[in-house]
Image 1 (cartoon, rainbow, N blue to C red):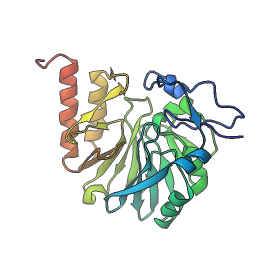
Image 2 (cartoon, helix red, strand yellow):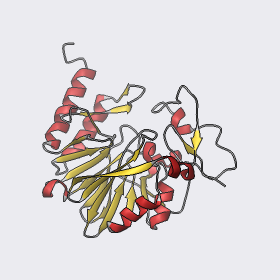
Image 3 (cartoon, rainbow, N blue to C red):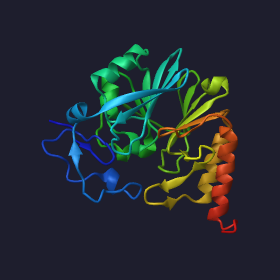
Image 4 (cartoon, rainbow, N blue to C red):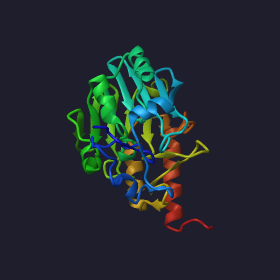
Length: 272
């Protein structure tokens, strides 16, 4: 039976003869059902209509994104390390060319997800490369296609490879996570954040929201907690979920400044 994919968020569902009646990810207040209604596709169809493009962000960090734009239009990041490669977040399209490129880069040792909006076809990726797919246990209920390759980690941090660890920040989702890459930014450290910490278009600030499309803010106490957790990590660069959403220098200071700015506005401490 086909595994239908929601065209709005690219979540892939368990096999069924007919498309699901609804997409709970889109119906959640953090996302939305498009005005045209819910629509469905499959991986087989996407392989005929889309292709993936690659960009090198720094020597051992590459981004892969689908063209034309697909769903939320996030990118996935591939981190290369001496102990193996990590795919950070997922995109829906996995085709023969993409698989060949990844294998040519050394394959994968694991896959990790920031939050449910980017789960997408994570099972397809995990099965294709025979690796575990790491997602936080607090978001287990949002999994639309259960599979033995999924690993639900718990607690506040999880080391995946030497120099690569996941940190639960919460915020956008209870299990919202970022990845800390110690060797990134020339050894100064980098955070891979999805949109748990949203790199803004000016590439000098970050945003923090429960829902970005529906404009639901987070409480200041939650943002301060997230920022305090990151302050304990060493990093210079921040790589976000979308094309050209990265802060390549001064990332730690940008995060502290952005959290303070956000809280000041929410608490009415700034003159409009």
